[in-house]
Amino acid sequence: MTIGMIESIKRKFRSEGLSGLLRGAMRKIVPRRLHCYRKYLACFEGKIGLEVGGPSLVFGRRGLFPVYRVAACIDNLNFHDETTWEGIITQGRTFFFDKNRLPGSQYIAEAGNLIAQRSDSYDFVLSSHMLEHTANPLLALSEWMRVLRPRGALLLVVPHKDGTFDHRRPTTSLAHLIEDLERKTTEDDLTHLPEILELHDLDLDSGVEGIEAFKARSEKNPENRCLHHHVFDTRLTVQAIDSTGLQIHVVEPIRPYHIVVIATKLDDGRKPDNRCFLLPDADYCKSSPFLSDRIPCTA
Image 1 (tube, rainbow, N blue to C red):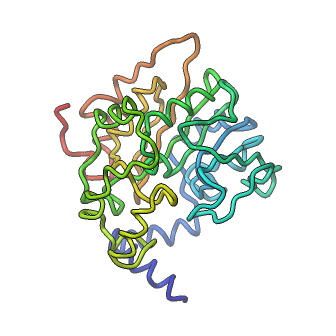
Image 2: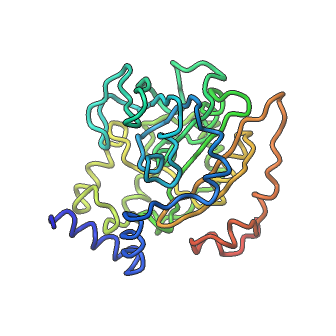
Image 3: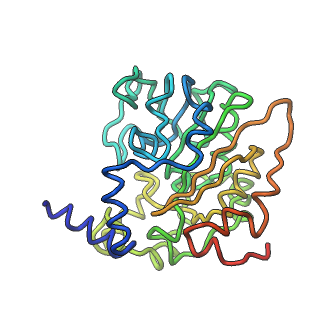
């Protein structure tokens, strides 16, 4: 067993305890699927999609929602031709998302400015643990909605604060996200850096060693995009998607730190009816494995 593996086990034990270690071991034997997987598989099977960020294990063959193995083709978009997570990225037909599928096209662009994508051009959009890295999430969501065909699906995964190094930070408000949209906040924004440096839990962040290294990396966020600008719980995720005008179908908070939402773009200019998901005591809050979701909300 390598030192890296030992450190990974220690971090998981600190964050999830013995039960978390056992769940992780079992998932290596029997892949876990979202409860909604079978019901909504048709939104992706044999269809053409775009993934923003990634590739992601969540959508892989042993992931929570294995889209890669059933999609006809998936294009990909990243913010730069070299990232912390993927290394060197080459544009062209270079996005290898599944061993049994031809590669999709790789694009380099901002998540809130899909300059190469026409409106109504994709059957689905995927994104896993990317939205928190953009300084203007509602702008990004509006762009993803634009490129969706009517009745096309968004499969969004964002990290829940309770299970990540963000757990000490206050949850971002929808009003703040709206303000970022109205101010046209750009990716060089470092508004949240003082809060992050004060409250970020370094013990749960495997990407850096020590506060000085973390501070140095964070100050270069416009280049590396490692910061979580905004802090999500399940309610905020629902509010953000609703404000974009998408119809929500599934909201599933799931350990160790995922919030999964499936939503679709309505046709004929219809407005979504997401009232049951916006209730302070919505079903997903009552059944959530995350404590902050279960705390009664008066909003």
